[in-house]
Length: 213
Image (cartoon, rainbow, N blue to C red):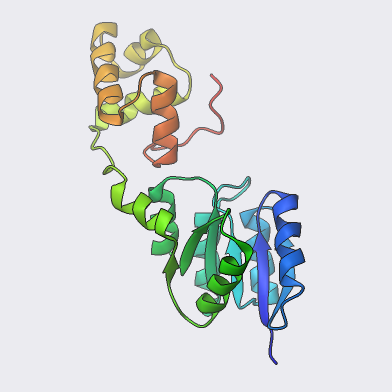
């Protein structure tokens, strides 16, 4: 029997080893590699040419969405299953748009996860009910003006209202008005929450390396 070749990608070693332990007892599957970030996953996928990549979304160095895009560009025949505990429906939708063939939650029972993996290898597209519900009920991405996006980027870099006013040629009172509008559109209670939402939804023009001022 030809075994399906599996590459496991997750930044948590415990999860990778847990998946490996259940796959090793399957007669029709074998783990051919593991990676703790998207960049390494892309390299291994090119070398190993796995049938299926089980991919986390949120990882250091390179996230699961970008890794999915690059793997599918290099190896269109490789199937990719997103396995996630959190992340916005926008992230999952982007992963599906760039080539992922399925997405399930990490708390999926082992037998159901194995069944999903087999079905995806055979060519099916599968979304767990929880993820389907998340995608259907996610609010639309808010429309921010160019000026609001500029201010949001400045907030992400820790600039004060006075800094932003000087940078953009506005009055501090005008900056406050724009920030109030941003908070309202993003349904955020604070500036920090607004920046966190903007990062999750990929709204920033130039995402900062971190959230520290």
